[in-house]
Image 1 (tube, rainbow, N blue to C red):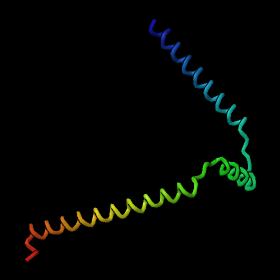
Image 2: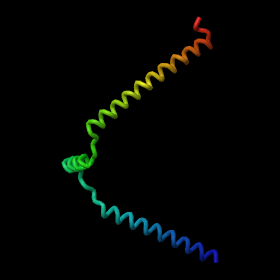
Image 3: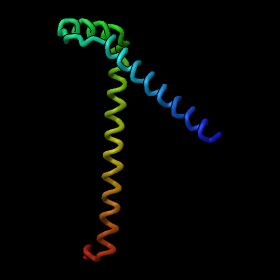
Image 4: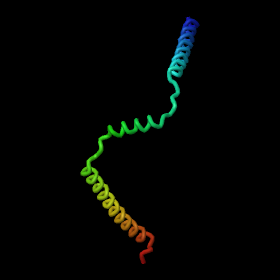
Length: 97
C-alpha cells in the first residue's frame, strides 16, 4: 500500500513539473521582445504626467514655509541641546576651570 502511494505522489509531481514547464514556454512564446521606442516612451511619459494632480501655488508656498519653520525649530533645538551637553561634559571632565 505504501508503494502505491509513493507512485501516486511521483506521478503528481511529474505532472506538475510538466505543466509548469509547458506554461512557462507558452508564456515565453506569447511574449515577443519589443524594441525600445524612444518616441513612444516620451508619449507615455507625457500621458502619465497629464494624470498628475499638481498642487496649487498657495499649497506649494504653504508647504515650503512649513518646511523652513521646522528646519529653524530643529536648528534651535539641536543648538541648545549641544550647548547643554557641552556644559555637562566640561563640568564632568573639569575642563571649565
